[in-house]
Length: 468
Image (cartoon, rainbow, N blue to C red):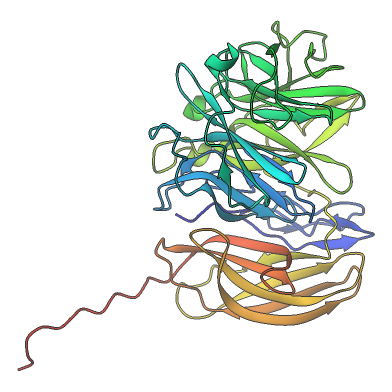
């Protein structure tokens, strides 16, 4: 099995009046309608990216962090996988937060539900360390969102330290005057003041939602704080009723009310996102804003067609959907995860890259890839090449040498690149088309994942004895 992959069916991207237009939906040619956007296909990361937390770095790159899981790729437990993207649609696995769990962790426990934040140029990755009686919040920091990460070496706090239960699923709100952590795992959702450096509790917990919820996330908009939480069992196979609920308040510490004015601390809650015939258990979300000012919910859900990982754990893939604010309330499409929609996040990039494979290449011999380039609002000059993902994360070998391209604003160009599929110990590989000046300065990439790799050559067998 390959490492997590992005969309299944890459599609060509075209630009009209600065907006994306649909080029193909479900294999049929669509009429060009402006303004519109090209379709994206959910999931955007698979086979695993549970409890996704997303941050955009100052250079425009998006980073996603996920719960520890065994992906079934032969590498064992991935201790909080990290992914990068330039457009929120194509993602690349770049490694794990920890090679080994920090020494203070219980060896039988794995960190989960990460929450990424940047304070004064330092990236703070809070995470949960579960325990039936005394769950804890951990913290790792780095000057770079890709790491390496230095663990605090102790808990920020555990349940017994703050006198409440269910202290997992952290989210930190920093308004410039102080930091507040929200936590909750079906023991009530609480807001807990933190010390100025964010490494210890510094006040009395305040209950903001009742015992039905976990996974808090807060958005501030038009004078309201919006509390997103998840309800139900995340991991009960096809029977999971996990879903996203929201409420709003004029104060970070509540009370949070739903559309009917009912308190989330007393049975209330507005349903935002629930499962469908295709997707089970959408939830544990983040929210990120694109360059057009549109908000996108990033969350996990389980495909009913293939709901278990080889380990037997629930397969929770990462999905995105656009939030539409109506009368100051968040709405998401028809209230269930989308599969393919004629829209993508609007991200200002020098050039957009889409990678297409018309036919699955044979695992031996040469193959051809089509790279579709769409320039932004300025001319673009640079290189385009093909590379494969490394098992340990990031880019591995270059399989098609760079070509030089120059595009005028809004120009769309198609390039054919020939490559030789690489051998892989897992039997599959991920192919990337990249644009930029070099591997250290990639401005966008497109991806096709899970391609069949040629078998690795057998090691020579030592000969013994003499020939007759």
